[in-house]
Image (cartoon, rainbow, N blue to C red):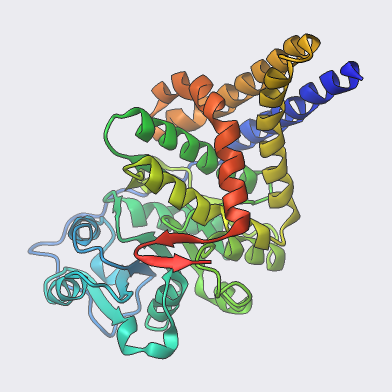
Length: 394
């Protein structure tokens, strides 16, 4: 009996290690698009984009009570090295109770790019929440490509140029592009651990796309072709769910257009966003993310989620069980060592890309906390019910 349990303790970490090796190879095979030379600057100040011109990108942003963050994002967008006539920005105010609406209306008069402000409060039939806000923004978009980010994000000056470079090289068969996201914040243990966990999600999502089995992406840095969005009926089928504006769309587009998903592995494309400031805020965010898992109809995502959970739980269960059955201890230790080695091997190139290789030192500490954390978050996500931006869901 103990031999069977011992083998089981090692089986899940071994399967996980094999998966991480495959994903590392896929990550390394991701192409890095080459940005074209910067055009010579025109004489004089940059002029706002003409309302009659057709932009290449429509940047969509959902905002709720983001008056403190939006000036930073707007300043970043004003510094884009893409000509102003090639992109527009549409921001939807989702029933904010702070100065978001007033700030946006004032900004629309001064930005060097075309800024359109949409108010969900003035269109009651549109509903509430991020998907409703993005859908409302999309209704006013004029570009063939829609690029999404969040109101509390920061983008570099070549963010949109990086998307343009990938699309120029990839051709018309591409329908969705996922971009990298980095959690930032104070140099605290909580921030670094949550940033490390998030980096693993970003790397896994990117590698899955490279391997042809896309499982995850992030709506803070995402672009998709408008015609493809309409072809799969957009958010239909999951519009009632508060979360999942990104991954459900990814799964639908992959099913409808296999081979049409890309990951934008370029430092200029990196989007930065502040991590949750407290443990309670972190748990609320992760439970919100986990709440969509039970609605997945995508087998690769389901299998990956189960494998990750079991690979974390097996060594922890073995270490606890060793108090009653000491023969389990070496097997549990071997499983834990295999899991840690696989994580470090996979995360090394990902963290190098993100400029956070020092986070590798935290992998053992994250592993100790991850089993109870993943189980708690997973069960809470299945149960449903959480508060986000002043709203109660579930």
